[in-house]
Image (cartoon, rainbow, N blue to C red; front, side, top):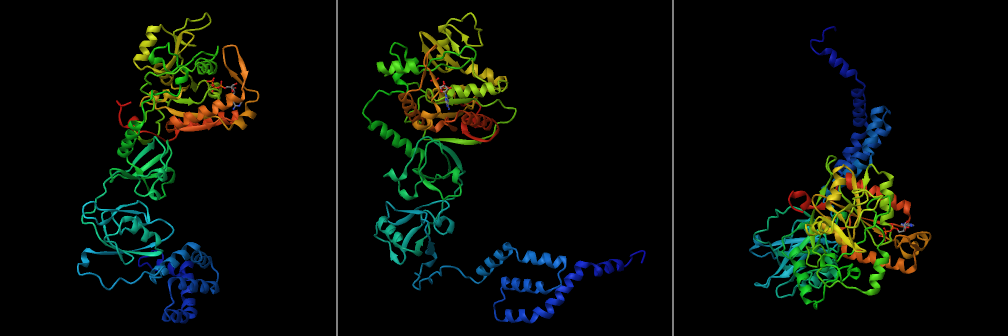
Length: 574
Ligand SMILES: Nc1ncnc2c1ncn2[C@@H]1O[C@H](COP(=O)(O)OP(=O)(O)OP(=O)(O)O)[C@@H](O)[C@H]1O
């Protein structure tokens, strides 16, 4: 048939197609051999889809083994399909475990207003807290923890009034007694309750914050339920999922978003506690971390004593402050004047709102700040990073009031400025840090950092931790890396041949007390400023630490990071 006017050719092709023939063969085999068998099973009530699947697989085994039959057998025998059908059968047969008790007969007349909720308690906590209503004395559900058992059931809501728990009326009971009943119950717990009339509509958006302090619920007598608390450490990023309660929020750690939420004190509550703690302390002058190195003869604004003396060839590499610090400690100078406004104060915000930020390739690079105790190797790591790729990495050229030497060039080793100009830069907040050495002022300015960034390079500076707050601006978006010493026993090994630069011409070996001092200083820094560290690198093996630093610096520029929301939401805010 040349012209397939009536579709005869198409029908012919269809009937000759191998797949249709294979299907018909299955059908024939199935009708002859399997029909009786299946009918028997169906009539005996055990022809569940899973049984049918097994039977079909059996039949297919006996059928002629064409490609299609093999394929069908493979599909029917796959574990996913088997699991799906088993789950289907379990649900269809209502084969639930454990069996729930029958509803009580004596349901009151106003049954409309009453709800009976059965929850099966496993090893997880119930995920709800209760309280006594101040006016009515009723026991009500205070809160339902997000992701907990009660929340997942969708049957309990904050504000529901408890009438009975496991058949025991709760009227007149203290919340602790009700909790006791719940704690002693195993398996199914039955609540009889009056649902809250106007369920709060949750229209809150999820908020992310950086914890600026540690929190241990088990040590907090004020928490409504310590077991429901979420412990966290400063610097951890939390996802706030519920702020309905003015005092107790619900949160998860972003490192474990699959977990059930926990209670954390609200911003308001923490601030109140901080204020109470602050006022309960006897008056003490506020000492900075670096107070012991302050010189009384210096003006108040020079409480942060910093030495900046460059290595001859590499601009911006500060000399060790070790010798000077030791001398100052021996003299026990104290700075009892005011601390700089940038010191972390106990009254600072307990949480900092953060957002995920990915630097756009055309944006300026983020400033890299290295922080660490004296002698830990901050300069060594920074020097290695810069020399590994000077076209990409640069340090900021510091300012000084000392006289320029014959071999130096203005803007290369230092920017040489008058004392008045330097002081003016300090007063106008253009210095990230500054200090005095042998009567001259030294400092790293924001302008010097800007210059490097404007060249499209990555600016790497080291900073005393007190300077972190000043540098944390929308413009610089610093990524802060803490260089941490390893254990003293490790340092004894790795620092065997290392030298501390104590003075311009004197290099000495690390002594045991140097290592101890380094460890102590690192602990203090972490305790006071750990919340600002984006990354911690332990400098044990120098090669390894250098490689980690390089990786971290690239990650800071190219991968999304949590940064203060203020840096992103506003162009005018710090
Ligand atoms: N991981 C390490 N293993 C061995 N030696 C190291 C290591 N890290 C640094 N050093 C050496 O320790 C000495 C002190 O390092 P560096 O000068 O970089 O310290 P720093 O943190 O900048 O302290 P300071 O501010 O006091 O100068 C240097 O001789 C350096 O080469």
